[in-house]
Length: 296
Image (cartoon, rainbow, N blue to C red):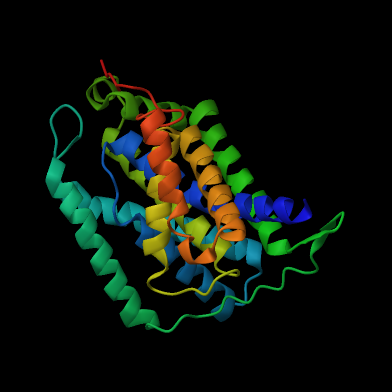
């Protein structure tokens, strides 16, 4: 029984990382109506930025996490304004130029990977954070790194909820996500809200990278696997649904951990897609998704 609980706790911790990345993907999709295929590289850059802040500036872990979130969020705003916005056309609002944005996402993924290779090289780098002694829960010894992931992820998710639901800025972002033309006619600065939405989505990916860094090595290719799991989590929960992204991430993490523990770790990457196929067979729109998204 303790073994099962241990696997579930590990799965929930890793699932929080998937949930943060999926949350960023879903936030960008709900706000911009695009699927950001370079989000795995944003996650990777966030981890590298956090590592550099931790090693070069000798910052404590919490300031490192916060500063990496801010810097990567600003980088996301810069990417959206300099590159993605050029593929859009402005009418009364902000309309995405379909297939061109998808191709641009793949292109940006390749560019960011190569930039990371030039700056940090191909060698995996350790992220040694002294978290302290494990937390003992009965007969279980839970590493503090997993506790940090869960606590930090919950704080970030709650903060995003407060931003979107309790502030005028969040109201403007939700208005743009619902209908850009109506938001534009209502006086909302649509391009600014889109940049902020994209930046916040990138900041969430960066947070996931910094949180997972001390558990795994930081390397250029680290974003590929996480991006696939995050997409699976977003689809399982309901693509575009923010609560669904969180639920999907937790489910993917737990299923992956239990599968690796009871079946085989060799097929660890397969279990998420088995869950994805099962959910799509039962409810094609995802657990918390809706059958059709209708905008006024």
